[in-house]
Length: 239
View 1 (tube, rainbow, N blue to C red):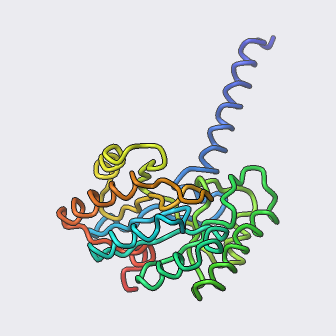
View 2 (cartoon, helix red, strand yellow):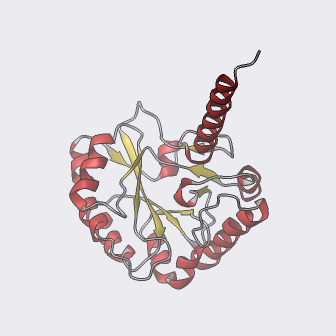
View 3 (tube, rainbow, N blue to C red):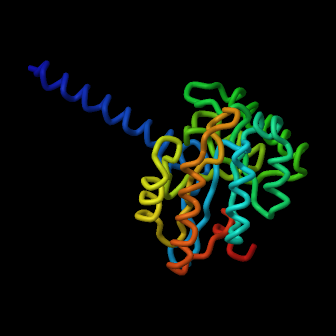
């Protein structure tokens, strides 16, 4: 005779396993389930990539000054709406020699969105970036790191490689000292560092903790003998 309590435990365990598996598929940094994605470069090379999400914003200009002072290349994952609002900031990123990736048009969390809606988000951002700065992104990063059904098809059509991160600074909520400590304690060869030069679609966002942290992170990592590269350079050293 079957034990109802045991059956209940089995059902509960299966549900928990299913939820955990889905969570990994959607947000796991190494997950390939919803589309091709990378989260680090070679661990054998002393090189890292620093990336900035949610821009451009008014804070992009002072960030470019900091990067320029240290002669550091970076990769900026930009939102189409923000590019449209601040085209000169987007152009300044390119003219300074940095790389631009696609971070969607309106920065939605794409859980439960249709495949058509997902493609529209990245297609609109792709077109806006192309029209504004004359560059066609080859990289994309999903808002909040959330991937969903339809991502693989969208990436194939738009020829976009998904990029997650090795280290995320949580600079949208931590102070500069905490961001700096978090990043420096986790960075190793091949790391892709995720920071933010915007706060989703906010106008004039306060990103001072990010700016202050970057001023500390860059010289510290350089002193360790690490070279900064764009994500494309990190993944393809011959570029």
